[in-house]
Length: 183
Image (cartoon, rainbow, N blue to C red; front, top):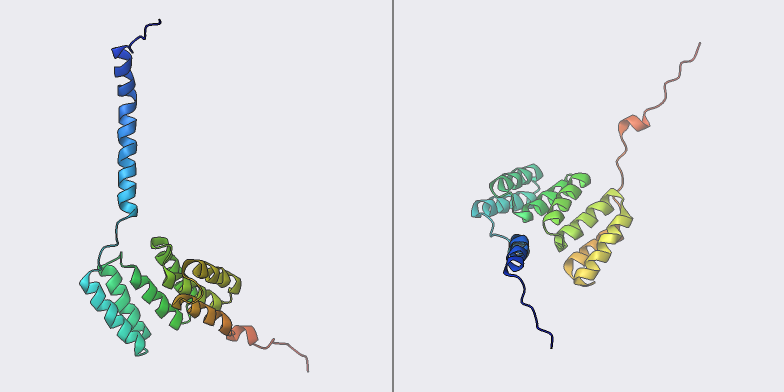
């Protein structure tokens, strides 16, 4: 019968020394990644919420610049409050600054990739700007996330039905050509 030989204690010690630090680092990485991925967003600063409400009131009253000022002040108080980006995007759309609105929506989506309001708002701003095919991609994404009957999907579907906004023509593009004639 063959005798089983026990591993050399020096070899065991060398194996543990080589891989213990790697195993500890890997387990720490997994633990931190899991806790960050599952953590809930922090509650917004109450001052930011107050400023946000003031901005929404101003926007409802038609005071777009006052709303933007309140939203930007709220964002300065609580830079991590994603809902403020959506409010700023809405104000930008009211000022016919769809490119700026899209930038705000994209920042919100960078922070919260499945934010239905940001996907819908970005799509509506794209339609207003004339990027209908890109907006249709947002609609398809919304339909896959929340279905055809959720309010965000319905809002983007309605924006697509309305179509792009008429483009403004710059005065310089319609100036008559000056011709010099000899008498």
